[in-house]
Image: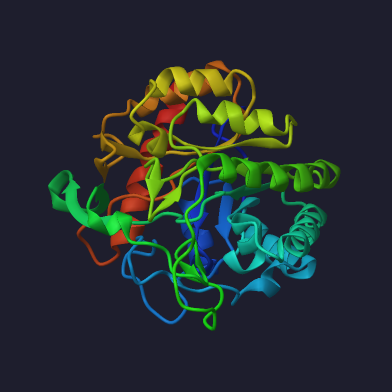
Length: 366
């Protein structure tokens, strides 16, 4: 039977599915399509090199996520086109790549001696993505990355999920040679990263945006910035960039461009201590500043919150989708992760439940 052409549930929003590098298999592509997804966002960073993760999603911890730089060949144009064709065989569109490899831009984040060299490499990567016909790159301009989440059973029925409860672990300094929970240099000198200010981090971001946004625009690629999760003001003795909603405006204003947008993470924004998630969604979708949206639900705010099922947290997801629809949002809705369900395929069941809910919600508002 011939696979139907790629379509969306309504004429504006599309239903997407996110996969980590180790999940880029034909079986998971079929699973995503069976769940109703028409678009994929993928990670080309091997977060799980040398170890197995039972829940298929990285949980920030003191041991880190592995060694950076193992999959750099996947960013070449030929490799990207090959992956895109594999995805398209299953009736899906490869919409976005999420997160650069720490090995590609650690000195961009740290303002180190290789910054200019790495900026040139990022420009080349963006051109490759454009040549492959992939429209979006999501990124998180962060030193500590996603860190300090712990497994919990706070979701309905004691389902396994993750949450954050502020403790001393969140103040553990970052060793030199490590960025975004991954080691990029095993032979670096001993010691920890030096402290620096929030303003310094914003200066580094401007250098990055000024260098790459013109290339992205020329290549037909949108760069989409993810807010800090967990959204503490400081984490592991380093500043965070976007830990309150109003900071999105500053980010977009550093280099105004239709190719400088947001990877709008609804769960992360709801975890922040300021703002109203519905007003924030309306504000940024009404000015066409959202490239795509991560959609999950949470209960609580910093310094303590839990991720829960899509239909049981503090966020009225259907209200969010209606706001996006009313503002003519044409991007992709992606459940970035979900609680694990008690069965032989916990991750698949949790994601299928979330996708079914979102598919029904999108149909209901269309």
